[in-house]
Length: 131
Image 1: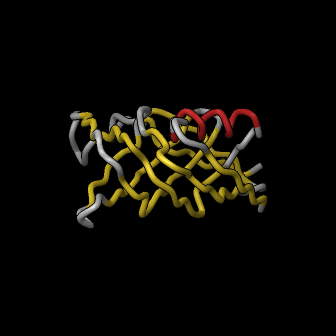
Image 2: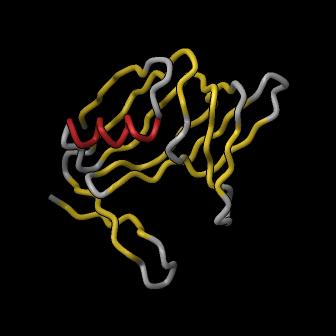
Image 3: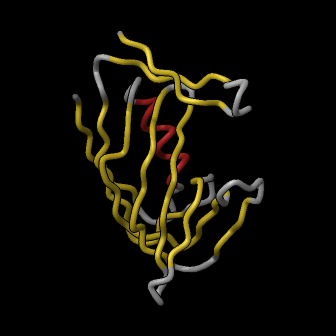
């Protein structure tokens, strides 16, 4: 397994930067080990909905999980506000770093991830293939 560590800076977009990181590093079967940081704007697709919601406030990133590959990423995020209330959902473009976002990303070296349309779910789902 390969391990990568990097940091995003104020104003950078979490999803755009993760996609670029995967492309630049030719990540074939990646996953988020951990991420901590803060946002000043969040855009999430809520659970089991087609609704994309924007939040214009400061949040702490309390969890970010998901898979990364050349075909795309599938990421879920949980955020806490200044009262400790949490919101979470599917990470969309538009989640902008407030002070920092620190990442540790892993990559499995013996498999390749890809995304293919699953006829049962109707979504681009993870396909895992041995290298």
